[in-house]
Length: 581
Image 1 (cartoon, helix red, strand yellow):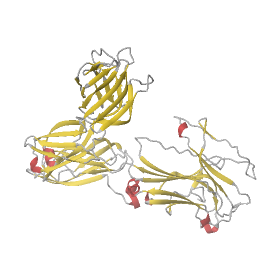
Image 2 (cartoon, one colour; image 1 turned 90 degrees about the vertical axis):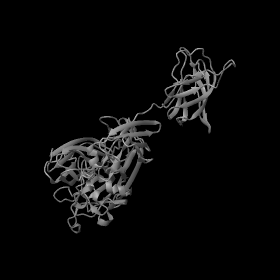
Image 3 (cartoon, helix red, strand yellow; image 1 turned 135 degrees about the vertical axis):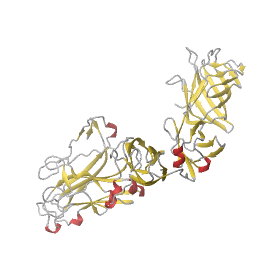
Image 4 (cartoon, helix red, strand yellow; image 1 turned 120 degrees about the vertical axis):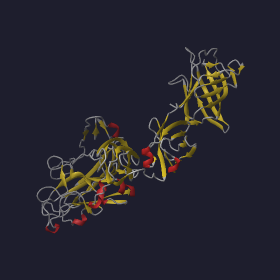
């Protein structure tokens, strides 16, 4: 077996004999891992037969089919689980044709078991089954087959459809040439979502007279997005002629992200009657909020408001939303609103929530969020979680008024940010400020003394001192600035604190990236903590001729420097950079 010109070794092989004929015909399935040799574009598999002849009729042996299964990672595709069964089972029940085996139907069943299915797989996944026959040949059915052809069952339920000509004797049909080769079911991947169960799942392939060679059974569960809109934050009462921002919460209850879809808004009266908003993306098991500006009608009464998520069917939905033939209209939500005169009594509580993330989109878990009403001097601490970047605050409706300026003081790790926001009438009416997300700047993960204007005089020796950082950093390298035309470098470095030695690094010589020494494992240096350093240098490193030196990232000083000649100083600081590469 060669793949793209590379000879590959078997990853597994399975064999079987018929035991139901005058000659025991051998058959087998070979599997190969060709991952290292996959190429972009066309790929070529070459099979050479080196075995002696085994067929007493034709005197030849041959291959019956070739199946290539590729599983790869793509962030834009649906999250998918795979179960793979391989084998080589020859079955042929009694029939009215030639070479009748005489075997009863219940003795010609091949089983494939898929274990480890979880409850969540049943609730949030779509299940499909692929069965591959290495060979298939059809024969007339016996009378006691009752006109029922070969069977494909998933947990005792029939899946797929009978095909194979006017007699409908099989679930499979050949896809090779000359009547042999691989055989697949009509849809190839057959839907088995309604029959999936927790734990072990059983696939049965049964011959009712046909010659069959089951070779592969592959089960997949995909987890598409499942978008559910909610008008939970929309007002139930509105004032005639007033403008409102109708908020629609879109929850993605599926495990895969939903991208590029629309949300439509319909109302009986008011302006406009219909709107559509585009949503770029909602991550799996997260939510976002869409706002529709709408003016209430000028007549009192009751009107209906409806929202539909993905009305254009741009994204794949869960098949199991329609289990047992029942449709779950979870992509639609409708409420009734009362249009009245005068002031509407606001909700009794006011909710503020959102997500704290860094500017590169990563979550800031366990953020610290305090919110102050600068108009009343009241201040609150929002609820957060160590495992999430979400925050939430619930206060009384009398704690916040239209025009109040709220100050958000947010921090995560050593980053912090203050944001101010003025409360609107729409938010008072809706009972909160929802999905108020804050992005924190990412401070460079580095401590850098930079290169001094005048690094001379320079000589190698042993530096000792302390470092205090302005922000927490992760470190796995130390870089040494070199005097021009020299090989100045660090040969040994030791970082410690009050608890003992934190990290030690050794120089590997003038090879590769010799300006840097690597630490393994990496370590964290916390903001506002004092760290001691000992650095042995070689050749002519750049020197900061100060006792104390303050940088944008922190502070470093020199407690002692003993040069190669034994002279001692207290104002020679090595020019270095601590960073993570």
